[in-house]
Length: 130
Image (cartoon, rainbow, N blue to C red):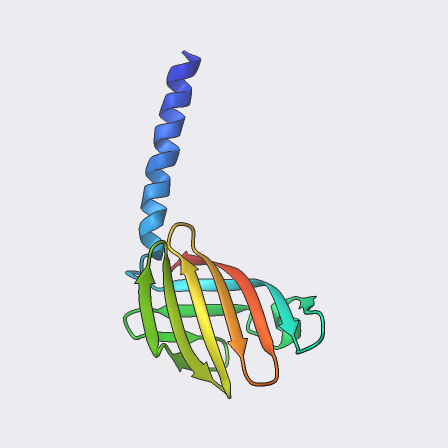
């Protein structure tokens, strides 16, 4: 009896995981929250802080159809987007920074980098389908 219940629970959890996986394949718009940030300058150790304390938005939306990433104050076009094994890579420029977003297509985790000739920001977060 226990094994049957465990088996049913495993099937239920796996079927739910398959449904979630489709949320991050670029077919649905996403709402992403930045959770952790690191500000890096040449010759210094990176400073860890909340993204908002570094001037980064707390929330971003990704619209794959319009090829736009939006924050609370501005939107920026996705200039380059490619699907690689297990991830979607997006790139663009905004306010004299080059940025890259790597989206994990299995669980919606994101890693973002913003760089210019003086410094870099590295942000980590999670997305959900809208």
